[in-house]
Each structure stands twice: as structure tokens, then as C-alpha cells.
Image 1 (cartoon, rainbow, N blue to C red):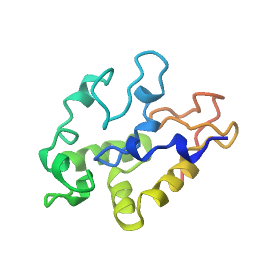
Image 2: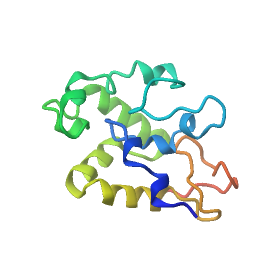
Image 3: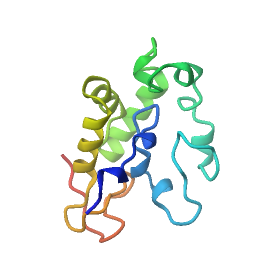
Image 4: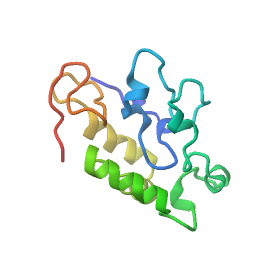
Length: 140
């Protein structure tokens, strides 16, 4: 079974994405360390991400998009729409939850939502099967 420490607050991207769930983070070869870490082995689209590189986010207190006067911006809305449709996850809902309930509650919710019921490992948001045991993901 996973520990809550396996979903680290530093892995929650400014847009609300949980990088721990990303296939780039979970892969063994050329492992990405998440949006908030140095660029290292990050996929190029993450290195040049408009949201990650937004100067408002880089200078606000929380480091999240919800503090911006333009929240949600056009780019974040587009990203959210794609993730809702393809991966059954909403960055906007994540950000609203973090803002209203705090990071600890969000991490607990993420642990519950993204833990494989069969093997107890963290699943990948980009895949329909658990990468450890191939159990189909259950969506809320």
C-alpha cells in the first residue's frame, strides 16, 4: 500500500496537475521530477509550458494559478478541457479544492482517488490500466 508521502505537495504543479500521476514521472527511463523541479529530463512541452513559466505564478505566495487575477486563463481552460475529456481529471477542480480545503486534504483525496484497488500502487492519469498490475482504473 502507498504512503501519503508518495504523493508529495511539491509534485502538485501550478496548474493543479499532480505530477506523481504523470507517465513522465512514473517511467523508469528518463524519469521527470515534476513541474516544480529543475528541467532535467522533463518532456519539452513541460519545459516550455506557458502556465509553468507564467511570471505571475512564479511570484505569487501559493505558486498556484488560483491566485492570479486572470484565473482561469485561456490556456488553463484548454488544458482542463483536454484532461477532463481524455483522463477524467480536472485541474480547475483540483485548484479550487486546494484553495478551499488546503493541501493536506487535497493530498489525502488524491491518495484515495489514484490508488489501485487491487495492488495499492499509484496509477497513472494517462493510462487506463494500473502500471503495476494492469487492473483497469475506476473512475468516479
